[in-house]
Length: 222
Image 1 (tube, rainbow, N blue to C red):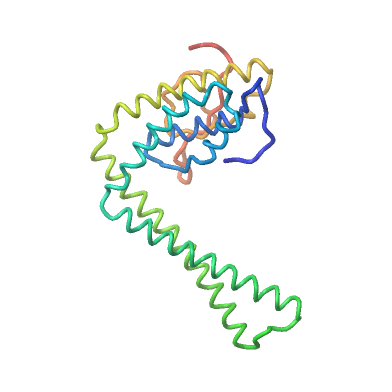
Image 2 (cartoon, rainbow, N blue to C red; image 1 turned 45 degrees about the vertical axis):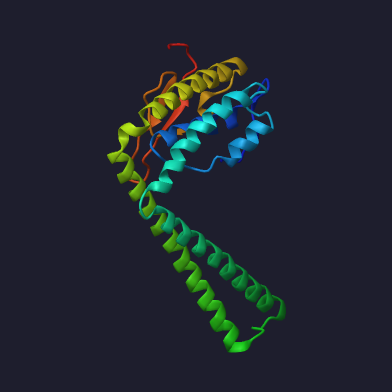
């Protein structure tokens, strides 16, 4: 999620472990982010050789929670619209890029005034598509938020299971950081929930950020 040089403790990539903790916490508040990069990390053994079986169970819980979003009225339609806008955006980027490169290479618009108009239109539509995707994502988020607020108890067991898993992973991360003698501030974690042990909150949510920023607590005070 956040590219950086992997820092290892034995066989475990601590950055991948931190990313896993973040994603699981986000699922507790129904922020269903993509998990393919975690599949890749597990397959590569970056979370430990014995983690594959544990990941299968975790992944099953995540898929059950994310799959329920398909039943929310209007969400699938909005997702399809978002995908169509995304495809259109790629076309517009390609057109604008080709025209720009051609103009730089030839030092003149290859299609004259018509080419300039096409470039400006493509650029304007690209901005509109980005704004549209942002608004659609926001609308999808509000629909999901409202649905799960109404059906909060339906996934109580899933959330409790995730909380326990996250707590176990935080203990592992804290112990790894202590073992290799690193500064815990190098492992900042973005969490929506802070009902865990072995963490220290260093930033509270604000107007622009809904999540906390925490670091693993190196002392064994659990």
